[in-house]
Length: 226
Image: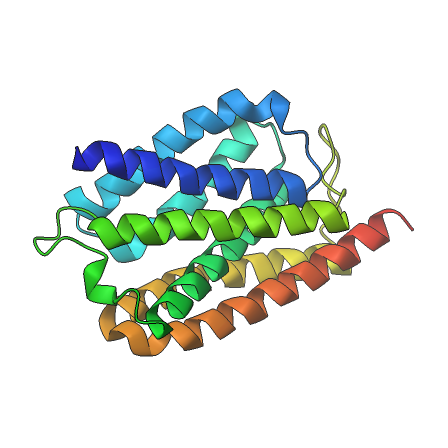
């Protein structure tokens, strides 16, 4: 039962990440539903193996992002540059929403960090699933707002296209994405060591990273269609 619940709620999270990604980068959703379903199950399996079989929770996000990047490259046939940018920005947005959700629920006395995992470390506790569900709801609100305001970027090509890495906007976006990728692992590792005291700091770091990525993606989009 615990394994089923983990797969179910983790799949909800991954669905929200992929839908957010497709909305932000103005990609069609319906044609990718089969791929999303497959990846949600696969990523849930990877996450469970990393977290509870290998007991390497601090590396779970890194492995998941790498898996997402590879999936975009080989299943969506999106070039490496765009795959990295899409995966990092969408996961950063999800992670920021997740951390903010925990901070709000914790400040209201609804949840504590020690309530998220089972005491024996074999899986999520009831409140862990509650946090996942509330996070998915918050992501849904964010997706609706983005869709309503018609925000997003259209610079990801449908097919293969030469990428000019010498262009300033491409260099900045790639470097910022790689820095964000490293920051994700660091934030989770520090959070596991120091607990609640780092969550507020982590959120502001994530918010700054996300704002920078959004700004650079907007510059890239404007340069693409000047």
